[in-house]
Image 1 (cartoon, one colour):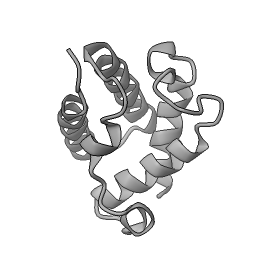
Image 2 (cartoon, rainbow, N blue to C red):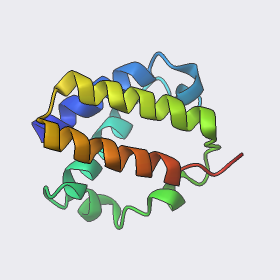
Image 3 (cartoon, rainbow, N blue to C red):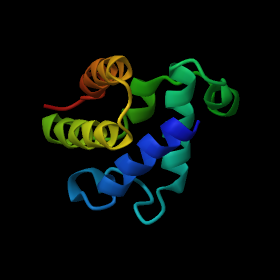
Length: 114
């Protein structure tokens, strides 16, 4: 968990200063819930405890993100901040490659507007 919490903290520190992404959050002044959910999701996805699913059910990422207008700009901002977060936590090369591959695919799958 510490690895994913650090990754997510770096990511959300950037989101807090990014108006393109910040406007997507229902409570932009308090991202603590979003930080926790993303940490739990990533940990579970990469083989950690199933806490995310225990608390929230199946991830259903596209469904959970459907209410938000996510286009190319939002995707690019999200991906840039996630890549910077990966850089900040400096994982081993094979972990970095796997994360970056996943983040590329995940970011594209969330796009729901042109």
